[in-house]
Image (tube, rainbow, N blue to C red):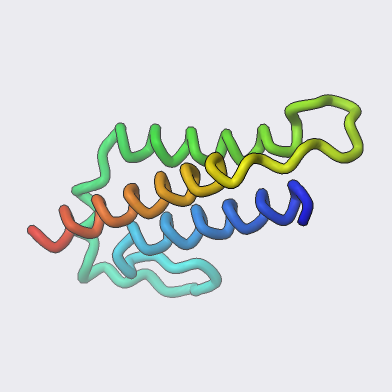
Length: 101
């Protein structure tokens, strides 16, 4: 396994979580906008955006922690699980708030 493998999969997980948070209003690779669920976007707040951007930032640092290194160390299993947990918590929290609308 390589750092880029984990980085790519974590990035895909964040991409999917962001897509799910948009409640079907906007979907990746689609040219349609479903305005009937637009109100569900109102639950997304500044803190949600901050958590998401921090998660993306951590993904970027996986490949850039040692400038010039051709093979940086793979993060520990705990760090990987922690990052996955952040993504799961983030999207589950948003979905719960959207259900209450």
